[in-house]
Length: 229
Image (cartoon, rainbow, N blue to C red):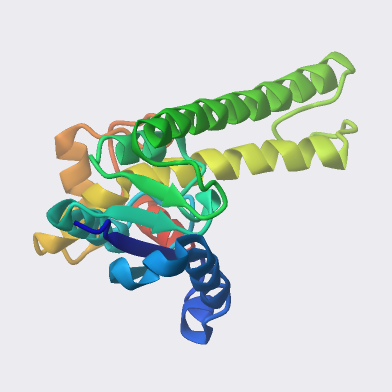
């Protein structure tokens, strides 16, 4: 039986999805990679999501179709999937062979091994970024610079920017973690942020600051962050 394929494309913004910007290049990469096997593509799925998001319904559908038809998932570039460690691990557990047009050798046991290495590298990069940020902040503090906001001392713009960037990343990561649960609560009929806040509090889900009690503004802030991503 001929090998069958499911193609998956992703763009980061709704504008790109509507205009085709980026999609044409991805389709061309998949076409060039498959060559004569292009006729064996049984389905195509397009996602319009940020790479930092882990909830990707189109990808879930693509993986389901690939399992159903015992087909391989084909992606134009590895960064079209994700740089997230947890997401790569989730992909490893999906039970589907993955092909990347920019890494032609990835498939079967070799592909699984390479995905594991990618996950390890992504985890290393995340750790190094965090370590560099902490080291820079510690060095600034040792020089007598006040951290956590301007209080009359001299804090470099670079140090302040690094601190803000790290806070934004952590807040976005937390919002992404909460996204599936918030979606579930909304699906249960909770229309107000107050209702959602009460539910999160009752479930014992901590806020980004580790508090045990949620407020309506806190829920609104998380949902606003998710809508901007």
